[in-house]
Length: 441
Image 1: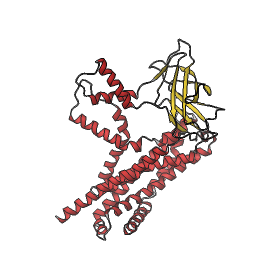
Image 2: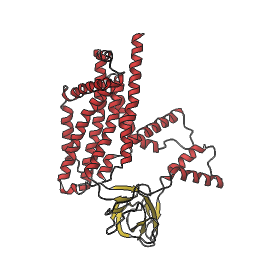
Image 3: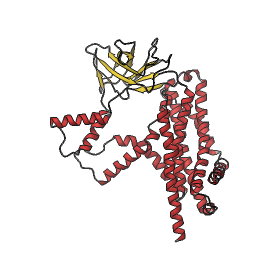
Image 4: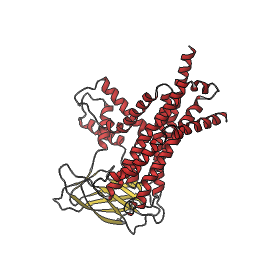
């Protein structure tokens, strides 16, 4: 009980300092100007879709970046100020537990950021909702990807086939071969020439309710240089059924998403579906390529946009929480500029790590050196560590009208509000113990 009282007192003090400190109004004013003016300045290609996407993704994405750095700066500044003034030693001597001190400083800085992030969301989304053209795009649909064999299983099957055929590369460890094969497994395309068909299976987590409406989304692709339109028919049926229950015609250009809602089809009680795409071009038509992982999805209509917006807000706040906790931990050892610089670098690396992890900048014939292996290790660690926070892409899902799954939300919130702050608390406590031992010495 004493620890909770201490935490609450430190929290209120930190929140008051963030909201009433010198120049505290500057950042909220800048974020408000960003939310109100940036959507009007970014027009994209002039279409409603582009304007809506730029307004949500760029404006709120920039706001989250600023608040992540602000949270780190606030936490680091509070701790650095306490160290310089001697208040840290007095606070710990009361005695106040290190965990209560960390939690109070972290939650105080995070609460101020949460208020500013909520205000930014409201300033961006409410005007869009009041505009009839953009309001029509503010939907929330469940998105279910095609059921694919695990990349690891595909890689193992390909490896065994290469072993039987004697085509395994010489001098390359099995682990590296499997890693490359697994990466290639996720890059393959399904191909449909003129008159040919492709089929996929979709497995839902639970059966659909009566009255549910579903559709199919397809993204067309073609081989490099074969720019043109693609036309085909899509059909849907419950898994295992003999005939196709619904069918629609779709048409679009290369890399264009097309959506085909199935009218008059009641899928109540079904949780597994099969879909088919047929290329309606003639025999001389260019083949259509569709990526099974990202190029086709089953859509379940009827979600609530504002509930999805709250989920997107929570995911953004989870990322801000991580860097706020990092700022508090680093502020116990370093000055505010150093702590903020380290947090900013880590933020940028966490954003680009997924892209770097997919690239291979080393010549296949060149043996990677120590620095290259170390760089790969750091990139992989960052990519795996921050994946629960970065991979959900809440603003991308929000602009595309895709419902953020509850499982993804729970995983991200757990990482952002418990796992990473817990690790930061351990670092914080370790720094304080080290400082105490040096002072006693």
